[in-house]
Length: 391
Image (cartoon, rainbow, N blue to C red; front, side):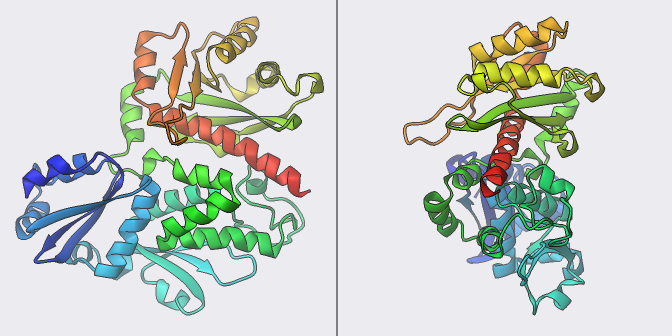
């Protein structure tokens, strides 16, 4: 059985150990080959017992780690593998609950609570970790925004201001449009991913792209964020990402995302409406404007790395702004490289200028975090554009 690992790809997905065709354990992985191979090297007596009982191991690839997390939960619910159930009683599992209301506010329930919600709500799970489900839900919320506030409460909530709530608090979204987001969220957590992708490709290309290329290292066991903290020490704690968004020159806006120790800090995100409309078709001029305005705020602190959505020209423009203020931190460019089918190639191209080799090495090995920084700045800018279109 150990020899099967040679045929397994290092892609996200789920795997299962079987005995006489019956699944006895289901798991998820960010890297299938690496994860499955680890079972044959372990000295943990519980895992040793399970592997010894199994006579086969199989896998199913997923489009992302988020998809793998959801597939794992659905497989556990369907097959009730004995080693998954043995690890926990039902009380220690967690479930996603989406109320059947006009403006539902999804929440997470413990296993001991789930029975009281089952009849009047949509319930998804079981999930083995509250933390993982919380991260998955937050990640999904960035693609399909939903509110955690009271509908029509009269004043905008904080999540509305950072693009996570579509505005149920201030009546900025209709019941029909809100239910579309909830329907997509439901399809996602049901595991009906092919149906969802097909639908989004026709109706919402931005959401289709975001879901197709979603990455969140915190969803992976032995998270790379933990490794990130171990590797960098105190050299790279705060990364700021910048993105420009506009619709054919109208309503141009710059967005700033902030990651602290490899994790997003939404409270520090900022939007910059472009003031000099003579530059509305000049991305580098707009980038220079938002950087000048950002670095007028000493009270926000100084980043250890600035990440720009763009290449060498954008890096030069950014460095010129920072140099005027005697700020000398690494400025990195990131450019999406498309494959033959138009999909994103694995790992976008990174551009460096005069970056210390030690810092460059850290950042090159933490590419997924940099992709997240860029994706968050882009999402934040786009969410603002969407709100403006609805007004």
